[in-house]
Image (tube, rainbow, N blue to C red; front, side, top):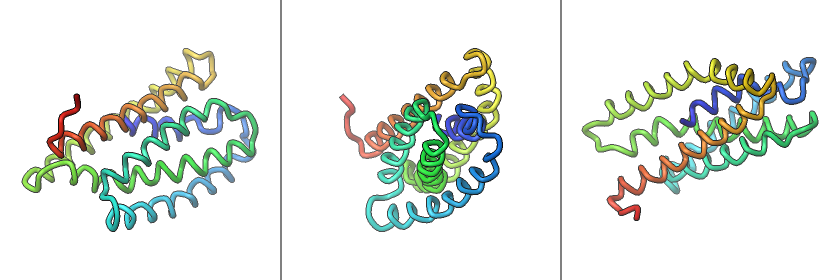
Length: 173
C-alpha cells in the first residue's frame, strides 16, 4: 500500500500551489535529497535496529508527512515538504528489499521478495490513474489524493507492525 503513496507523490507534488516555473528546480532538489536518504538508513538498519524495525518509523513519518501535505500553501513550504518527504520515501525504497527478506524464513526468501515486488508493481501501475481519478472527483483539487496517500502509507506501516509481531510469534490481542 505504501507504494501507492510513492507513485501519487510524484504525480501531484506541484499541483497544490501551481509552481510551474520552478518544477525543474524542485525536481533537482528532490532527486539530490534522495541520495542521502537511500544511503543513511541501510547502515542504521544493519548496525542497530534491523531493516523492519528501521522501516516502520520511516514509513510512519512518511504517512504523517502525507497528511501534512494538504496544509501547504506557499512555495517555501512545498520545498521543505518535498525535501522531507523524499528523504523518508527514499528510506522506504532502500529498506524494502531487506525488510521483505527479514520477514520470512531463509527457505522462502526469493518467493517472498518476488511477491512483495509484484504487489509494488501493481501499485505503481495503478497509482497515476488512481491519482487522476481522485483529482477529477475533487474537481482538479488534490485533497482526496493527499488523504489517500497518507491513508495507504498509514495502513502499510500498520501492516509492517503486524508482520513484525507475527514474525516474533507474539499475539496481537
